[in-house]
Amino acid sequence: MRIPILKLHDLLLVSIQVVLDDKSALELQEDLLQKIHATNAEGVVLDLTSLDMIDSFIAKVLGDMVSMAELMGAKVVLTGIQPAVAITLIELGISLPHIMTALDLEKGIELLKDNGVVHP
Amino acid sequence: MIKVEIVKIQQELDIVMARQKGREMSKLIGFGAVDQARITTAVSELARNIYLYAGTGEITFEPIEENNKIGVKISAIDKGPGIEDIKKALEDGYTTSGGLGAGVPGVKRLMDEFFIDSTVGVGTTVIVKKWHKK
Ligand SMILES: Nc1ncnc2c1ncn2[C@@H]1O[C@H](COP(=O)(O)OP(=O)(O)OP(=O)(O)O)[C@@H](O)[C@H]1O
Ligand SMILES: [Mg+2]
Image (cartoon, each protein chain N blue to C red):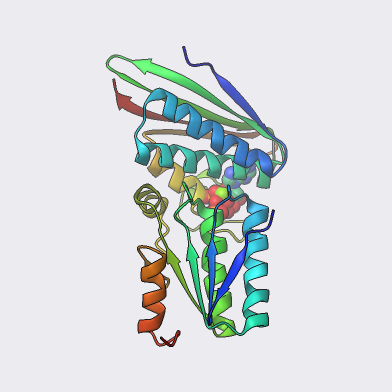
């Protein structure tokens, strides 16, 4: 099952609602870049509220996805990272330093507005 | 009584299986949300290393008990190529596969006890434990 990518005005919204295996993570990476290309979206909000863990592989895929989207000209915000997930990520030694994050989807969209990516 | 569980790692989806077993077991033993995430993440790293470097292997989950604490012991065992330089593998950022090199050192930090033994041409064994008070 592919993870759905929704278009809302000039934004793409992705909410991961499945158990994220390696294959789905890589498919999402590819699908998202294709969708950015197809829609000319300049902003993406990727909601991770349902993820109960992020290991080094998934972190790498997410980080790469953000860099790749940026290369194409789209800004990505990661939202909803759970407390337990944030703690384990830092303990793993992964801090995702150059990545925009927000508490939830709504704040993620706001952040893109503040950065001039989305026009209100 | 919580049963000992074994997950064989043979294909990529077995990483998810192992993760789920780790989560299930840590819940049963009574770990809180953060420790559950630590254990699940450690299992995911160990399972992926088996899948990636050895191809196949297995992960065993055992409930453990000592004095006034209980916990879980997780053994990840493979008969793969082994690790040439264990000291390097324990360093943050060391990878032979273009990964982040966060797996082995990360697992060590996430768990309370960590043991690794690896022989080139023979295989790799990683045993970790996580404890909590009864
Ligand atoms: N079970 C194993 N068998 C053989 N080599 C291993 C095994 N586990 C780890 N290694 C070696 O140790 C190195 C470090 O492992 P580690 O998990 O820390 O990083 P990685 O797998 O390269 O990247 P990441 O886990 O961050 O995605 C690996 O690149 C690999 O060379
Ligand atoms: Mg690894």
